[in-house]
Image (cartoon, rainbow, N blue to C red; front, side, top):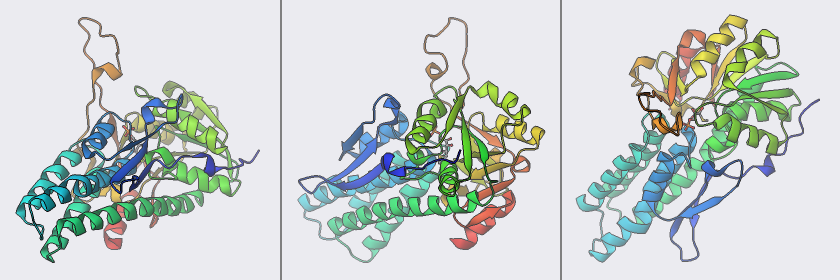
Length: 364
Ligand code: MRU
């Protein structure tokens, strides 16, 4: 049965705006509370955004890119410009720019693997320097940064919709799709990357079902992907990570679609831990393996996946009650070699893995 899609049921994940007093404010979905509670948190404090990124209240590569940019804008609007005005600075001088650089570094360092975070932060930092070189006052720069962060939200959704259209074209009618982690609307400003492909295909009546890996240890598949797809009206079946092989062996999976946190120049892809294993399984069973990500996830400075820093997180995520004498290894991501990837789908089209970085650089 074809899915009846209802994206109006999905919240916007990240939204920069103004509160009643005109202060800049970020509204975000606290993803730690899902699926039990859909809570929108509002903050004007950039440090609270850093904390939200570190604790996975806001997570997913594009979402943390947009949130990181918003954090810098919050600082500029609510602290930097006010401090400069109190100091009587008509133009943004080294004091303002140095403080902005310190904030930008702290935000960019909140998580190491998804390149979107640093990409978003540095984009705002560069803009601030250009404005300062033109003699702009701190409050004018703050307004520019606010507008730029808002533009990034809109660009993110537009890129995801384009990814969805390119990805949907790769899927057969009646597709049964397996996904890992959450690369959905919740992982972006809105719409999603891997799930953007699902939504675009569902809108064309092509999706029979999505299988969501639960995604140990944090459970992004179980808590977020399953919730999001059910809410959007897409048939979804939750499986434990160790069930994917059996499902594929039964012939129940037509395609795998996942997101990415960083894509190296050669097409190797870092994504949520467990993605590599799914790619190996897909290759064994002759199932196409698609990676859906915006061009901002491509990092030409990483020659291969070996150059991508892999975040290691708190052992308590794996073993909440420590067992004396037992060590825990908890890498949050792994690297899938380009050779296992059928296509990388970006807003610019669907590419053989090594071509994705070249195409993204040409488009930049
Ligand atoms: O640790 P997380 O939940 O931030 O990891 C997220 C993922 O691995 C996603 O698959 C990736 O960021 C792509 S999101 C569109």
